[in-house]
Amino acid sequence: MPALATRQTGPATESRPAGPREIRSRASGPPGHVSERLSHEFVTIPAETVDRCVEDVWACAAHLGVDATPTVVERIARERLLAVAGSAPLIASRG
Image (tube, rainbow, N blue to C red; front, top):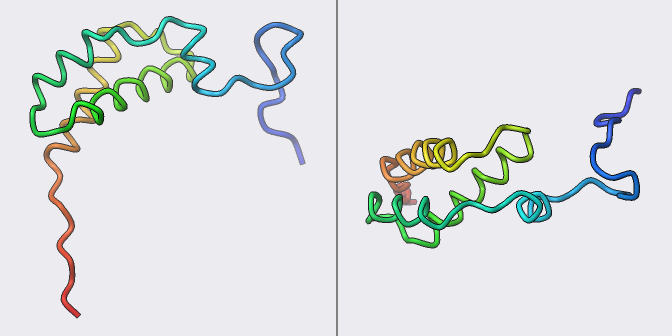
């Protein structure tokens, strides 16, 4: 059975693939103004959740090899936050 991810990128001395935190630290992380701007736009969502969303989008883009510019990260994070803000809470069933 063929192995998944047989190609390794990065320095030859690296023995394991980089995790999301390592990828984020190699590339410059998301600028704070993206989280700040989205926090002002989504006042019903806690700032910590907005920060985590922006960081996740940045890490996912870096992981996928997408050019993670602040504009791209902000647009994707905004879509995810719109889904969070528009979702209804689950109703507990009576039983």
